[in-house]
Amino acid sequence: MNEKQNKRLMHFIRRIHGLMENDDLQKQRNVQNQLGTILTTNKNYQFTPVTVNTMNAEWTDYLQKETEPDCTESHSMIFYCHGGGYMTGSSLYARELTTKLARHTKLRVFCFDYRLAPEFPYPAAVEDALAAWDYIRSCGYDAKDIFIAGDSAGGNLALVLTLLLREQNKALPKGLILFSPWTDMTSSGHSYHAKELVDPVLTNAYIQKAVSCYLGGMPANSPYVSPLFADFYGFPPVYIQAGTNEILLDDSRSLYRQLLTHNIYAKLDLFEGMWHVFQMSPIAKAEEAVQKAALFIK
Image (cartoon, rainbow, N blue to C red; front, side, top):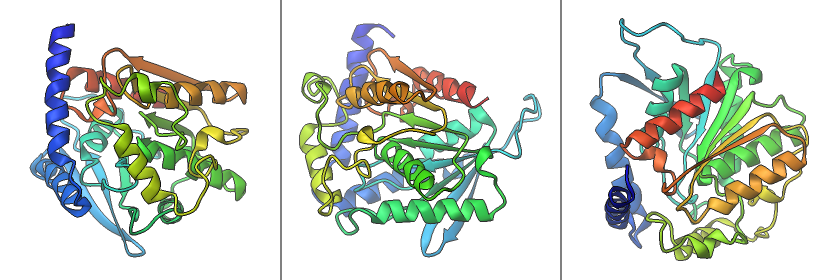
């Protein structure tokens, strides 16, 4: 894709995202869910709804074609935390990524609908993530066979969940896969200002709204909401992807440096000209990125 094509595509992404930006959060959530339901009739996937306590969740399975090589790892799975600034998003909307992950890894993917802000600020989402984790463990999965993945706020949640599992002396996942993770609610990175004009998805105004809705009195520099400031000792390997045209670029770069400082195996892939969670887009670069995530898992 040349620079002119990339600019046209980012303009299109900005317009589409603008249609979903609405002061009425419930309308925005409904639009996202409607987009996610488009994949419901795709015969390449099987979606199995489950309930964890009172929380909706679903399994995504890729129905492998007879012509494809059988490389299924039946004992492993992906535990997916959806994004949406902790204000929107769902397992339905996350299908644009969970289906790609299921297809490229041939693993089962589990995604859950944690409670959203501002109705349910911190720590509601974290409590729900812990409940979902306990549910998966009760299904017979060993922690060493679970990969925690997430995009944007879901990447934040994946890191915080792992932090809490470590603090509770529970077994940790085999690895983390983070797509454009939101790691710093203090917005200290240079990219928050340097990339705002080129990021077609996020604005600083949206980020500040998400912060004010979610924190619930928690300090913005607490590692439980800004995992960039956590002590990562003992963490499993972490794979990070980000686009060079996104506001949260420095959230990924700084996280990568922090992980290395704590002697944690980490890999950061930056995708030139790409935007926030571009992996959800129906483009070749998104397929390439998810394939790299699959290689990390394998």
